[in-house]
Length: 366
Image 1: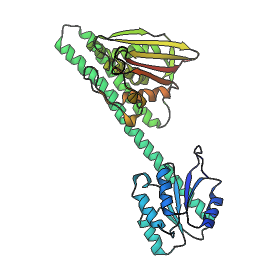
Image 2: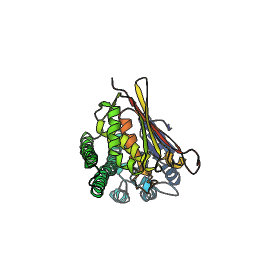
Image 3: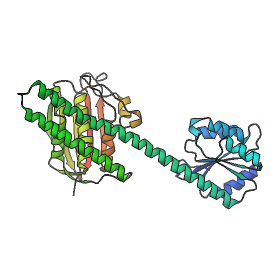
Image 4: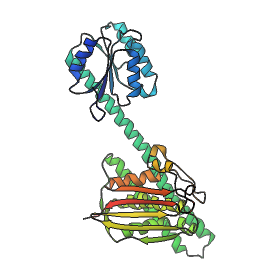
């Protein structure tokens, strides 16, 4: 009665009388995916094994375990605590209904029921369920966005702080170089906060894409990363075509290229090399950012873009991180209509040839 590929809501029908089950199936099968249980224990097993379940129609009077006990146990488990439960029973006295609501039922329908009423109640609770899930999803997105903003804005403050310290330590060493770094960091930090504010205002809408010079974006991102690159005396090879890609410029510079360059510097050995190259093909361009640093084990690569499993590792010079840079980078590349690939060889497994290469594919502007 159920299809794993269906997007229709999934209902569990629990009743120990086959005739009652047949009536419910005939009423609901055209609009919903259905699962059936004739005992309370069986119903609990199905709920535990069906994370996509949307609602339970539950009889009260059943042998071995009644519907009240089934509802209590569902409410005692985190995974089913919020699963809508509608009691569908002949026990329709006021005390029975009050008891049902006290143990966690969402609704109470008396047998014999009116089909139109039952359908309306099912639709209502499914709508509430969908709205609760949407609220939870947006709450998670907002928390992720807060983490992401803190991550990238902190990067810009670090650039300003580092530049001030270097300028104070060597006032005769060319203040103009440090001023340009701080100016770029301040400019991009303000642009980043404005971008996030606009994204929250638009909520689920994508950022507005426009033609952006890839070469100019790479150079701006390298200015922001200059302090980290110089600290480790890293050689940077840049072979990027002067093409225009479809992107949001602030996100491309800060959250995509900035995170890629920062990540490459963080895990490179002092005196190492970072290679930044592009290759155009068809209506797209692939940008490769490759380092020859410590690389990543396969377990980290597999979860690299999952913000709920973010991995924060110290760099080769003890640099700290939050683990949110790579999920954010991929999030924006996907919003640009592009894609991300990563290949990495961990130094522990490949001592002679190690490092990481990110390849981002972006659409060329018309």
